[in-house]
Length: 189
Image 1 (cartoon, rainbow, N blue to C red):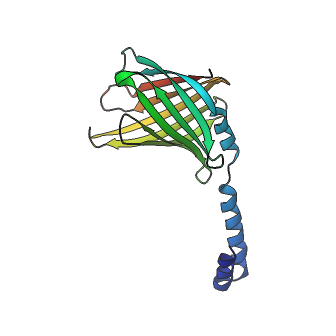
Image 2 (cartoon, one colour):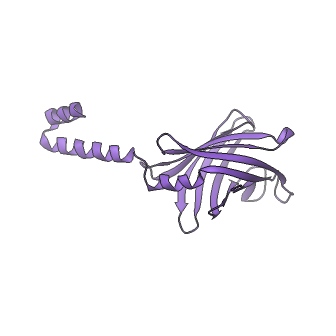
Image 3 (cartoon, rainbow, N blue to C red):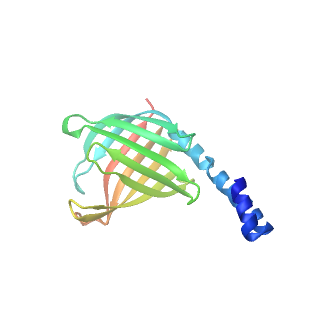
């Protein structure tokens, strides 16, 4: 930091030094976890899962159960979620990393699972009144040749239960404007 201040002083004079210091202080503050990261800590712990998957609108969902382990990582900056659910062909393992980007003021999520070698991302906001996160994402599936737009909706039911819904928007293979493909309810054991 001293080199940056000296460089600014040489190039621009005293006012540049003050601006450089203020900029560095702001950058340093944004690097630390904030109150939004405290919200993520509510998810920490072990959870039992009830999973519903719809293959098409109007059909009965396939259902299965599983377990979830959540913990904070990287100095309480991110929540890592690891799940195992289903049996046989429905067996699924997932890993997700959720955080809050203080620069862009958005909650973020990146997810991986054993259904492929790809990843999905989303970002969005938290509605304190609803106790609900709505994270929007987009992806192009090169195999199927379709663009996918989706919301991850994460809602606190109560202090011992929450749910995640994956809702596709304008999904090319269905007529409905919104198609909820997945709903997972998490309950403390």
